[in-house]
Amino acid sequence: MPHLSPFLTFLLLSILKILVVFVLTLTAVAYTVLLERKVLGRMQNRWGPSRVGPFGLLQPLADGIKLFLKEDLLPIAAERPLFIAAPMIALVCALVSISVVPFGAPYRIAGVDMFDISDINIGLLVILGITSIGVYGIALSGWSSNNKFALLGSLRATSQMISYELALGLSLVGVVLRAGSLRLRDIVGSQSAHGLLSWNVFGGFQTIAFVIYLLAAYAETNRAPFDLPEAESELVAGYHTEYSSMKFAMFFMAEYANMITVSCVATLLFFGGATSAFGHTFDGFLNNAFFNAVLPIVWFVAKILFFLLLFIWVRATVPRFRYDQLMGFGWKFLLPVAMANILVTALAYSLTSKV
Amino acid sequence: MQLALFLIFGVLAVAGAINLLLQRHPINSALSLVVVMMSLAVLYFSLGAEFLAAAQVIVYSGAIMVLFVFVIMLLNAGEEERTTGSKAAYIAGFPGAAAIFCLLSFVFLSERGNLGFAHLGGHLNAAVSNISEISTVLFRDLLLPFEVTSILILVAILGAVVLARKEQ
Image (tube, rainbow over all chains, first blue to last red; front, side, top):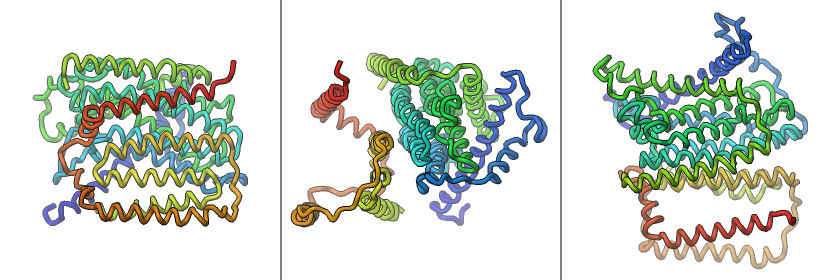
């Protein structure tokens, strides 16, 4: 593109990247729902959706049409502006954090990196910050519905999310210490030397941090076994009791988009991001421009798929916590262990004077 | 580009602050404050203080304001009632605010040379990482004040725990 100014090239390519990632993320969200229903079905010895399209593959489309065409109810006692804004906040926050995730190896066209939307020095903090803003969507939805169940659900969700955010943030510090940077590309780069052996979860000795992160992430996304905010046996449906049609769909999509984001972060920080599990062993094999660009993405998608399946597996297996157990677990177990992990990691690095 | 960002988010911050005062429902006021905090974070970011921007979002918008909203939700605070305002506000408040504004602008304008200047977006292009600069200042040059501050915060936390504890 020689006739375009660098700024215009950057702008156009960025818009293109944003559109592609947006569409792909929404599709992935829709199909994660289908995957969850299918896998849960198989685990409970039934079929799951199987009627719409081959193997039920068009089910997300049917669900989408159904949700679009449903009546959009607005409770008479609801706080109108906040009631409408809450699902938007939740969905926007869930989708925006994808923008700092690097999906593949650095690959430049006209000086613009094609496999991430933005590569900034504080990528990790941006994800944490956006997650903490996402709490508002849930808090406001429960309050503005003017419904006791919704309020209780949103109080549960909010307190759970701010409690587990601490353990989640602290579990990542060990990884940051190892990489010496908050930039996600640097963090991935610090794990790329010997494939599987230099991933943070194995060779980086951040296994404990990974377990803490995974537990905190399940609580952060309000998934089983920490899905108390939507515990249907106690709270009807929690904070989205009063929502219908597309507003409900927005909360639903936000939950699954958050699952994908959390899986992305786990992949980037503990499983070497888009790098191969075999390191440079097979570098000579399939070595041309096309495969060098595509194979990292395949690795990345495979790792995310693994985490999504883990989410679903856990949901099918583990029963729900009691609320005081949940809080006690977060504050009295995860937080101290995360802190101890930071101390030990820092001590180890200062003794070997790696920094 | 940076100037446009500055103008948009500067106006947004001021508008949020005014809205905070004008809204009658506490939750709307709290949310306006969130808007102010977020706009400030964008301004920090456009000045090149990226770490500060992230800390602003995580600490102020993400933690402190969530607690504010939480408390308002739990107490179910109703709408405020409008009063005509106290005499003290008219006699001392407005002239006082105007005087402080004049004083501050006088100091900033006359001491402009000594304050140095930040260059919109300039720092973002530099190779120096913001985080390592901050940590050098915080953990080496100003280590003692930093530790003293953390003890102060610890004392405040303990005080809060003692005050909130149920008497056995």
